[in-house]
Structure formats: C-alpha cells, structure tokens
Image (cartoon, rainbow, N blue to C red; front, side):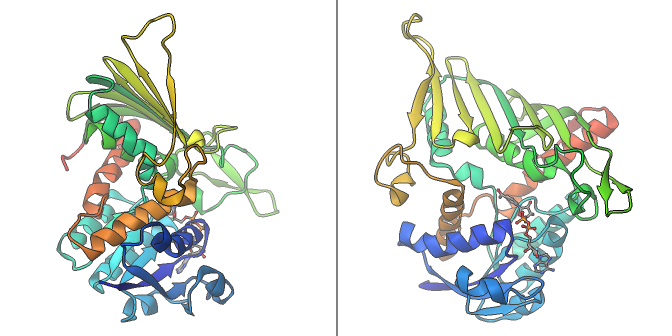
Length: 373
Ligand code: NAD
C-alpha cells in the first residue's frame, strides 16, 4: 500500500492536531503509506482552512466525505455527540476510522460501535495519545523488566481548570445530550487508558462525584442553565490482577492545565510521571545508600523510541502534537500491514466501561463490577 486517501471531519482543536500529524507523519516514519489529503469537512464548509491544512477539496456534508471513493481513512474530530453516527457510517462505508475520544455519549453507543467494528473491513483506533509518549513506553518496559518489583498500587490524577471559573458561560459541554459525561468523558478516560497500560483491565470500583457549579450564565438577560454532568470524580479501583488503585479527575482545578499525573508503586520502587513535564520520567529504586538515594529524573532522548525519529538530541523534548504523530504512525502501519492498531474500538470500549462505571457507582453509592474485555 503506497498511498492512503484521507478525509478529515472537524477543523477545531483536534482537527488541526490531526492535520499536523498527517503532514508530519511521513517525515518521521518514512515506512508508512503516504497520506493523500483528499477531503476536509466542517460546518460551515472549511474553504478558509483547506490550504493551510493541506487539503485540495472541502465539503460541509460529512456524508459526502464518506461516499467519496478517494477517501480510505476518516479522522473524526467532531464533538462527542456526533462520534457514534459518524463512526458507524464510516465503517459501513468500508473506511478505516481514526476517532477522537471518548467513543460516544453512552456506553450502549460505544458497545454498538465496537460490534460494528468487529466485522468491518476498516480498522479502528481511538485517540488516547498520552499512551504514545516514548517515556510512557519506557516506563512500561522498566516496569515489565522488574525495575520497581511487584506492582502494589496505581495512583492517578487528571486535572484541568477549563471549567473552574463560576462565571464561564453555559455551553454544550454542560449537557448530557451533547457531551455525555463531564470530566470523566473528557479527562478521566485518558487516565484509565494509562492505568490499563501498566496493570491491564479494571475489575470493580467504588466512586463519588460532584458538580461544582450547578448552573452557568446563558445569554445577556440573566438566564442561568443547569450543568448536567460532573466537574469532579474519584474512584477506588481494583484491577483484574488484584492490584488496587485510586483515580481522580477534575475540570475545575484552578492552575492545573494538563495535570495528568500518575504513580506506579512497586514493592521495590516507584515510577512517576506528570504530563505537564512530559519529557521527564521519575524512577525511584530501593536498595541503594539511603543517605543519597532519591528519585532519578530521566530526560527523554533518542534511546526512547520513537523520540529519535523526531529529534536526534536528548533533552530537547517532544510536544503534545508529536504524540498525535506517533499515534497516527502506528495506525498507518497497522492499516498497511498485519499489526493490530491499539487501542481499537474493542480495546477502548473497556475505558468507556470504566468511566461509565465510575459515574454509575457514584450515583448509586455501590461497588460496580465491570464486564471483562
Ligand atoms: P472543537 O470544538 O475545537 O472542534 C470540533 C469541530 O467539529 C469544529 O470545527 C466544529 O465546527 C466541527 N463540527 C461540528 N459539527 C460538525 C458537523 N456536523 N460536521 C462537520 N464538522 C462539525 O472540539 P475539540 O476540542 O477539537 O474536540 C473534538 C473531539 O476531540 C472531542 O470528542 C474531544 O473529546 C476530543 N479531544 C481529544 C483530545 C485528546 O487529547 N485526544 C483533546 C481535546 C479534545
């Protein structure tokens, strides 16, 4: 497979991120098929963005994009409420699908998407880009090689402050109909993808959640509208392998911009990471001289594949958009050959199950057992 025709739906934050990845991927991973940027879609029609994004043709109707024979692979970067309909239609049209997280508004929709994907001709991947960080991969290798001994606990936090301001106007993000879950669907699912990367599927959990700002201002006439989903959620989880963990998320945490932090505790050490310092990994190993022992700070460099495909020099650093290029490189490789993309719709369904279980456990005040993947 030499070239792949690309259709991109959405030109916002993630749409631009996908466009950057399509333009960079061949320079970074020369072995992947060349993306041929065919058709760009948004409402209104994105004629203004087309040239900058590298697309020749545009449309305002995503169904036209799916009907286009020159499009082999579709990026879906629209708001959450459109994911289910667009992804199912794309798979039914025989396209490969690169979908932004979360998969859908409801668990039932996500389950149906995974079912359609199981028999579809096209391959699928969901945008859990943080697991693509070369240092997260290095952390996994260290862990699997016994650098911190037996796992005993996972503690993870993902906080941002984009909904911290009580005066922020009401938007679609506050509604079940357009956003689905709140902080859990937006942020918490990323944390789940990281936790599962090290410890495998989650078996059961208890949880609590809160909506900090119950209403938000709407329009200029003093109207306020309800916030229907959670600003904060926290869960105590048990993985299928018996290890326990603690996951929490907030979209109302002042000062936190992308505070995706996690610690993997082992009986002989710890690995710790903070996405706001995404080019650093911290490793503590017991057993050295206790008077001088401490966390070692490992800076990203060419030894951490595929860092060297971007930059030959250590410590110079990758950025958020580079994670998307790595994610895309993996997907194009899978589409062109026999490798299995990860996380496919089937894999990501587990992350959806976990975040919906956190919301359910918080609402019912009960321990919820999660269906095995
Ligand atoms: P955004 O509002 O910046 O962009 C959404 C785009 O979709 C807009 O350009 C909008 O006009 C377009 N759109 C809306 N309806 C459309 C339609 N019917 N047809 C075609 N285009 C349409 O939103 P965003 O922040 O880019 O979020 C999009 C998705 O990406 C969300 O699901 C979000 O959860 C996800 N996201 C993922 C990450 C990540 O790290 N992987 C980060 C941010 C957002």
